[in-house]
Length: 311
Image 1 (spheres, rainbow, N blue to C red):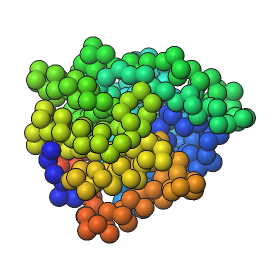
Image 2: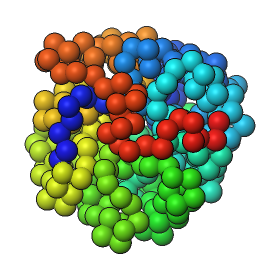
Image 3: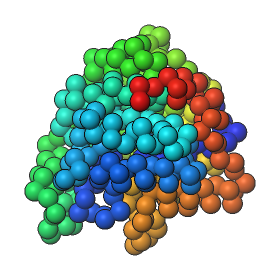
């Protein structure tokens, strides 16, 4: 692993997992997404990981017309790195998933490194009534759902974004097998270091939130990539702060945000993304760790620069 001199904080603003009924703080409209993104950047996030939603219902969408309503504002009011999802929303076609990133030509885009059972159906049982008709079927449908990221699909995303637009990737890895998938593309010369590996723990279908699993992922990545990668950790739900703090102590980076957890602490909802960013920043600084600015993160990750994007 390439140990970080300064810790990169990523913030995943809204995602496609949580639904509007789950938290009033979850940003839905372009205006809400823009404001929470800018506030998160001001709180210390160097990278903003962005999805979009249909304003009237909060349903996930990859329609570039929606992204156009908030990306320029975010760029004009902060210098954070924009990271566009290629995972999109559950059940979208690959073409739909890629639409926003192909238009935006961002510095960074997420790329899931393998297919997996992606189970979020347990959340539906905890909520008696939803605000919108789409929410319960969306969640319960994941009992019989595979998040598809085949070798052909991954290679297509690399060709569309990296080859065409010099976009680099946040490689999302839910299991050790996904690291070997990444190594396959590295061996073929289709992706170049340094690699930003986002290790994900606590999603049903992927690796669990045990601390030992972080060590397993790191040891596997060290063996496969040596010092050619930066580690970042995403802990789902209540595991968020504990697991990402361990990542930082190991010399890695961290990701927070309402996409990953709706909470600030035990039994307490976060009021905003910025509140989570501020909390992890405070923890890191108490541990005598420095926080990377957006420009420092750009240099670390060898990004093309905000002036080379399409928005």
